[in-house]
Length: 191
View 1 (tube, helix red, strand yellow):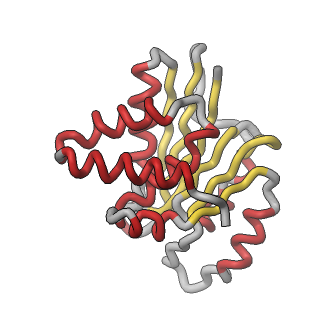
View 2 (cartoon, rainbow, N blue to C red):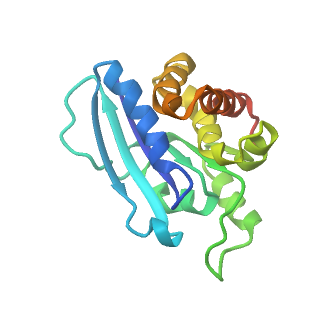
């Protein structure tokens, strides 16, 4: 078993929380895990990304080679396009529909969607809208995690347990809202 995941977005969107959830589950399953992340500009709304490699065999590099990412999970649609060269031919691109417009020349959103749709295996969901509907506007990252769950090597139950362990210090209500976001993302249909 081996999965290579790229997590992408903009600072403050919860990319590293998604990585933490995956890491929590991988450690409990006694899997090998390597992670490399770039988040130096995150405080300025810059891009944030994480290479996450999980395997039942030893992993020697924390960086995903070009063409070997099984999954790109992006909380920002244009950021998903930045990492397409890393995506395997049969890999999945799962992105949020809502852009984070932080530059003056951000392309028309339909142009971004058209590029995403060129990827054979893609999903576009309105994670912000779903998070707002369930009463947790800050959980669009967990909605994205739920949308990608079936493309990972982990079950929904394992992801829910990890969410509980990570968020329990903030109270049961926060745990429940995040589990609700995970489930809503898992049930979401692509736009």
